[in-house]
Every structure is written in structure tokens, then in C-alpha cells.
Length: 358
Length: 143
Image 1 (cartoon, helix red, strand yellow):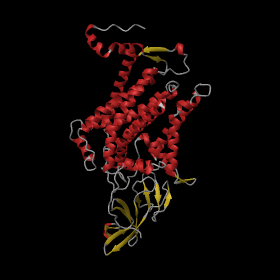
Image 2 (cartoon, chains in turn blue, brown):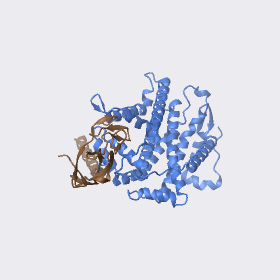
Image 3 (cartoon, chains in turn yellow, brown):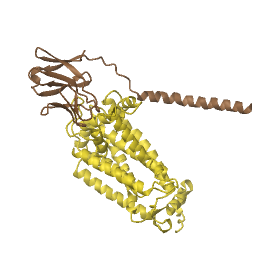
Image 4 (cartoon, helix red, strand yellow):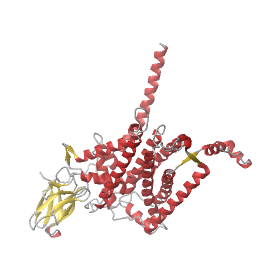
């Protein structure tokens, strides 16, 4: 490995103040394993890139958006019809939100199938899962902001599910809605959550996640002999490839946003019936369809409670994966984890498809 | 003796510090809980004229801040139920082909008496009373 180059004379002033040489030496020692599944390493970076797109387009949308029930829908209509390239900015924001969640799911499953959650990366896994939770909360809170019919009923259902959480449910639902039902108070709360609370928490957690990735390095799959794993320097080899992947993601995003502009739908009316064919965003389709299947009562318990308990147990089982993936001798249960990953993908895909077509 | 004093001072300082932090956090948490609105209870609302609704049709009527589904089953038979699905709070609608009340969110069905027919709703829809005064339809709470 070549030693880091000495600082150029003109960079000495900056180096004395921020220690740029230590960053350069850190980058010079960082490597990425090269094997048949290296391509999956790019999805973490793609998720980060799409998050940055969200931040930029979100700030632009905030210049015109108004979070009240009388103006929210109209302000988005204004953005889409009067503001120059407003339709494109809004479409890019919506499409990149969906692509970001898709990239995060791909990143998560690649971590599972490459068994990158193993010791000492348990906290990296937990911070990643928390980031996915924040991304889904971003999606749920942002969905209401256009104040259209579909988003209104999706929020009614989502916040009502919160009311089934044992003990704290009704209070939690009231705090989420800002009252007894979904209305103007819900919209302002979701707006504050979407543009202030979640970005702050995500930025903090993202820094923790990236610091942990930096500390432990990038994991190679357990079936590769550690001494025989080839590697490439992170800088510039991997970084340049990652930037090419970002550029590819930008191309896909631009095409989707321009060819299939995101629709606005009809304005929400609290005194209208839920429209036929109502369904949530694709990433909530599986729980949505599961709720349709659960009968009203199961063994003296309400169906909704069974649903909430079931989802909570499933989430706990998944979150604690790095801890049950290790047997008493400390070896990784590779087959169990791969089986669990296949099971979860099968459940999510089959139930999402059924939720979409039925 | 020295240790006892030190421990006492540590407890006092620690307790005081914790209490001072809690005194700032408590109002913030209470701030999140929205005030309970003291809206006057509505017991009766006019729901338009009898001619507004044809037989085998329905409409949503505002009953205070809640939606109520008014059904005209025949020339003379009227019904009204809460339009809030007992499953997850969606607003129901009338299916005039099946002659059932339907919730589009999770495919729950109720009969015309508000009783659950199929799907996930756990309870029947709350019933309201419909009275016809001349040409005017009046919906009121059940006694």
C-alpha cells in the first residue's frame, strides 16, 4: 500500500488547522472487498444519495407548500401548475422517496444474505434498521401532506392502528393526530415531524451508522477465506464506481419523474366515503393486506390487537437478528438467517402483490 | 462520616439536577397532548329534504364533527348509521347492488341494520334515529 503523499505547499495552511493529512491517510487505508457479490455494496451509498435528493427537493417544496387543510392541496396544485419546473421537483421528491425506501430494503437484504450483521457489527445493523424505520415514518408523514383523499384515509387507518397499542394506544393516537380525529392539527404535526424532527434524527443516526461502517470496515461474506479476499482501495477506486452508481440512480430518477409525473389525486373530504380501490404506498401493502385477512375476533381478542402484536413480534424478531443468528459456540447460523431473509422477502412480495391486485 | 456526607451531597445534587431537567421535560410532553375540545354535543341535525335522496340510495351527513350514513331503502323506509367503520376508522359507503354497507379500506361489510356481515370490523355500526317532518329528514341520536 503506498504511503499517503505529503501535503502540497498550498494545503499546509488548511492542514495545520483541520488535519487534512489524517483524513487522507484514513482514506488511503480504507479498502473494499472484491468478490462476486461486490455489486450489493453500492446500495447503501445509493440510499444515502437519494436521501440527499430528498433534502434538496424537500427544501425547494417548502418554499411554496402551506400546511393547512384549506391550503395544502391548493399549494401543491400551485407548485405543479404555476411554479417553473414545480411538477418536476415534486415528482422527483415523490419518486426519490420511493426509490430511497426500495434501495434501503435492497441494502438491508444484501446485509442479511452477505451476513454482514455479524460481530462486531451488531450496532451497525441496529442503527441501519432504525434508519429504515425513520425512512418509513418519513413516507407515512409525507404521504398526508398533499391532503388528498387517499392520503387522508391512509392516515386515518395508520393512526387508528396506533390506538390499538396496549396501554398507551389511545393517548398515542391523540398525540399523533393532535385531537380525536385526523384534521388540520394532524397536518401541522405531520409537517413538523416531516421537515424538522425526522431530518434531525436521521442526520444524527446516519452519522452514527457511517462512523460504525468506517470503524469496522466493509464486511466480506463468511464463506470467503479472510486471507484470500481481494480488495480495492476505497479512494479513489470504489468511490468513483459509487459515483457512477449515483449517476445511474439519478438517470433512473429523472426518467421516472419526467415520464410518470406523480399524481395529486382529489382533495381530501372528511365527510366523504373512502373511495373504492384505496390502498397505501407499496411498502405498506403487505401489512395492509394482512389486516384485511385477520378476522374481527381471534380467541377472544380483537383482530386489530392481533395485527399489532403480530407486526410487533415480526419487527422484534427481525431487529434482533444479529443476536439469534449466533449459536452457543459463537458460529453464525448462516442457513437460518438466509432462510429468514427468504421468508421475509416471500411474505412482503406475495402479500404486497395480493394487496395491490385485490 | 466523610463518605456519608459526600454521598448525601451527591444524592442532593443528582436529585436536584434530575428534578430540574424533569421540570423542563414535563411541560414539553404535556404540550404534545392536544386540549380536549369542548364542542357542544349535537343531538339532532336536519339532513335535507326527502326528495334529495332516491330509494336505494345513501348520503353522508355531518352530525357535529362526525359523519353519519343516511340510507333511503324504499319510498318510506329510512335508516341512519355512524359512517365510521369500527375496524380502523375509515368512512363507509352504501353498496346499492349488494344492498349492504361497505368499507373500502379493508373490505368490511355491514347489513342495513349496521350488523357485521363479513370482513374484519369487530363491532356493529352505531344506529341513529331518522324522523320525517313534513318533507324534511331529521337525524337524531338514539335515546
